[in-house]
Image 1 (cartoon, rainbow, N blue to C red):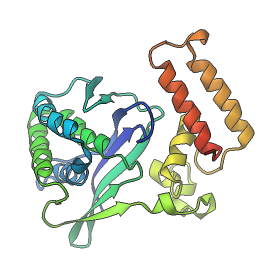
Image 2 (cartoon, rainbow, N blue to C red; image 1 turned 90 degrees about the vertical axis):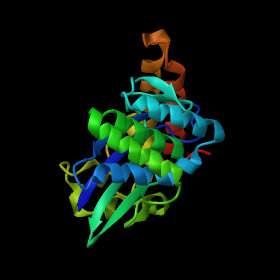
Image 3 (cartoon, rainbow, N blue to C red; image 1 turned 60 degrees about the vertical axis):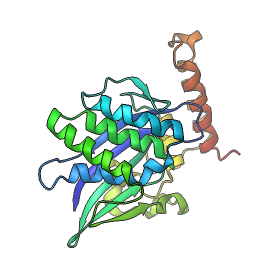
Image 4 (spheres, rainbow, N blue to C red; image 1 turned 45 degrees about the vertical axis):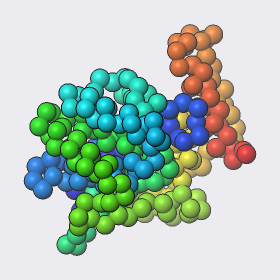
Length: 252
């Protein structure tokens, strides 16, 4: 049974831009506080990925978050933003399984710093009392990296990244256009899903080379300042489109 969920949107590790935003989330704070528990699990299992400078900056960020965070802004060398277009997706869930709790932690992005930032952003977006509760849970988790709250077992979601792509093997629930987004993308590796979303391809049918190139040319034209696009962010967008094209065409 799903008890809590946090979706973090972010650029991939090797991209030249560093951006993070929040996706859908379900973080109940009423007793027994499944939302704070999930945030603590994500923070505990990813905080070790911060470098020394980022670890030092995290404390002041948590203090700022007590009053809420203004977005967009920069933090830990990332740009915190509202826009999720073109960003990869990592989804973390707290599940009730039998008589226990399982933290299903998404490692598709393989990018720990945005996950920590996602927990802080999610907490900061709450009302004052639940915000303080969640920030305390995050701070306590960061003090004990790698240690989950008592009674919670971790399950790492990595199968899709290593499974051969086979759109025909999706569960029946995913075949319906009314299915959950995660179900529709079942079995699609994270990098490929990100690239398909950048180009606006729907799940279910591998894109054809000619259509990839056609959309690439159109989107680059729309992103270029010579064709009326804003100068700010144009270079980042064009780099992103080039990387997405490389992924879809399986170029090295």
